[in-house]
Length: 450
Image (cartoon, rainbow, N blue to C red; front, side):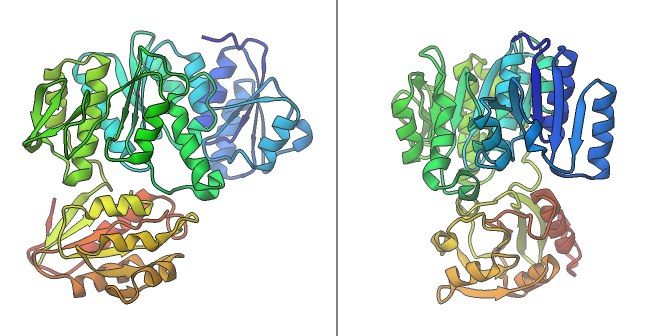
């Protein structure tokens, strides 16, 4: 653990992670100042708590003339090209993020999961496998408690299953995961990273500090992931949901094999589709490479239940299955969600984050019709124009009603927007809840919640 006593630390952003970082650093004797460009009652309450703990807090804007510090800790959503970060670097201030700070504070092991899609499910499942083994552990990062709090809770003998984003990886320095998983790399967050290449390079940082005693698990079916694996000095253990990679973990005749040993049957996996099988195999491979016993891995897998808003079956109405995958916030996630379904009416759209939505046409078939909404409705409509029927609507209620009118018995209505939610909703959770509410308001005597 680093010595923070007397160090001048600037925490930029007073979200949940910023609050936890400032509070912990103050406890360690650092001279902490917090700055946030926003101002709200919730932020004011957090600010008051931090002031009582001895921190200085500035809300409603960053006073650029007062940014000098020994080190600055950024909240995950602040771009590295923002004025505040440029000013910090111009003054010679070291800039790190939440993950790097937690790593410097920790004595536990980290098992890190990144990728464009599937991070939350894989991380949650990996945490369940660690817990089933009896290891002091928990899920953290973009899920669960703030990472800085998690490292204190699990202690020096524990392990954290860490969901880590490209934003967080962009600000690591010495962070070294004992096991790293790269699920997939597709175009996403180009507005934040500046380009697709910048996004890929941020993902690649997950391996930069690993050693030969660590493990890196790339998706064998993802070319970029495997290219990153070629750079790694850790042992590379590729995973696949469709075949058996050499020296990896994968599928052969309906069985999942690791190091030549059958671990479980594909029928044991509680998550739907190819994407669910990939997430399960990746989590199992990470746990096994870390040293978790096979029996604990299998028990955790069989007892796991899908997360809300991630391929969540909401209801069956008139023979049609309504599925909430609001967490599909980019086209790659939408394509993964469609895989394995048939006769799909797709509800898509939102804020596109600068991503090319034309790739969504790769979902045809099984997508037979599209309902478009949100800021990107016109882009979605253009992508599918002349390919399948498209309707544009103004609300989620209208989207669900339009989809019901088109859907056929035996098929599905799938909310997999391929876009962020912040044009119309506070989060993907809010969007998924509105979809669920709209579905359950439909008439249909045979409606059944799952």
